[in-house]
Image (cartoon, rainbow, N blue to C red; front, side, top):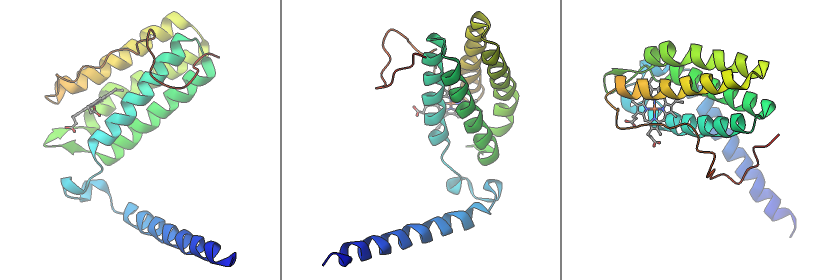
Length: 162
Ligand code: HEC
């Protein structure tokens, strides 16, 4: 019978939709109101920050304006979410440090990319990476050292050229 698999998928869709409904409802609870163990995992944000900052580095190295703008935007959104969702981590302030160290640097880099003044973009990118490391130092994670993207061996199955 051809109808039975689609009936199965219908049930699956309903299950997925109701799971989304639950997610939306719990989104109403502010992260600050939750005990720390229920807050979104800080390392999940860090994985995104590492990924987007690295891809941004490759896009800048290729002088690819559109792709650089795309990744700087992704980086900016991730930092904004981090600021909203993770006020602190094991007693160390996260949101205030991210706000003071990262936001203006990323914002400045975004504006500089739009001007295509590439030496200034390179300098702005270095400042963002320095910002990552400043926070790692400020939060007793100085052993996590981020480097600018290494263009001699980019690991993605992606072409960063314009
Ligand atoms: C507001 C402070 C802060 C900022 C800003 C910050 N980090 Fe982190 N980062 C941390 C803390 C704290 C940890 C340790 C997390 C843990 O204990 O799970 C961490 C951990 C990490 C890790 C290790 C986890 C992993 O997945 O390997 C990486 C990589 C990382 N950060 C990358 C970055 C990058 C890249 C940036 C900048 C684009 C950045 N971080 C900016 C505070 C910060």
